[in-house]
Image 1 (spheres, rainbow, N blue to C red):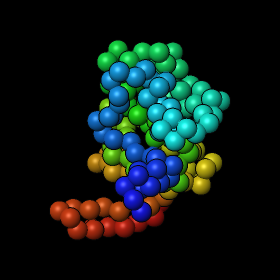
Image 2: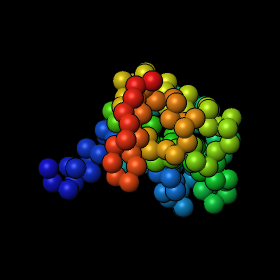
Image 3: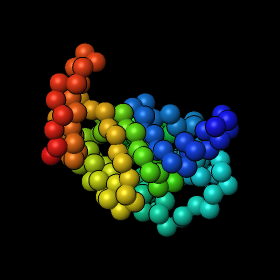
Image 4: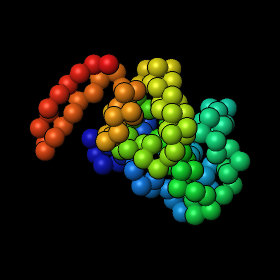
Length: 152
């Protein structure tokens, strides 16, 4: 595939949740969430975006810039952006790293619900055993070597 086709494939099929958000600072929270869809001139499922923002408790921050909200709210925005296009695969690097216990549970439940509802695959990197417990399968890697592979 050409670089252009690869980029389009990634936007349509893969959701990325980065540890450090990677939000566009000049776009509002709502615009950041819709960004992957707008690149491809996709029709935005407004009802689904509303649901994501409500579940992630950021609907009242939709018109704010990333610099105007907390780190936890920025992380929840990044999660909503990754789920906005209902991708087949989601790669998540410490998706709850900046959240308190309550918000972490809510985010993990949202990810689990999304995976089931849209038949997605979630690959999550975490150092937190409580977060790993939400997974169907846990692969432990130490110093680049797989030390265990178990199903929950």
